[in-house]
Length: 81
Image 1 (spheres, rainbow, N blue to C red):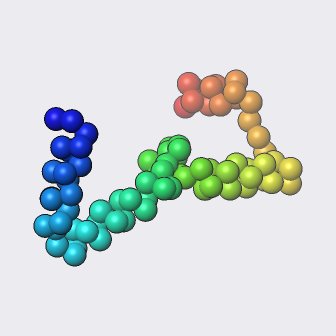
Image 2: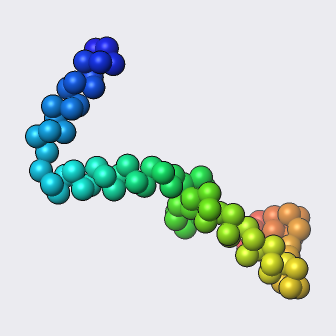
C-alpha cells in the first residue's frame, strides 16, 4: 500500500473515532514530543529535560561533598555482595 492510500485509510478511520479515543491519540501525540531518552534502574522513563536536571542534581551533590565511588569500588561491592 502506498503512502497516500495509507493516509486516506487512516483519515477515514480517524473520522469515525469517538471523543475518548481522539483524546487518547492526542495524548500520545503530545507525549511523543517528550520522548524518553533514558530509563532509570527502576524502569522510569526520563525525557531529555528530566535527564539533564538529574545530571545537574548529581553534579551539585558531588560538588557539595557527596561521597562518590570508583568503578572498581562498585564492581567489588556488586561481586562480593
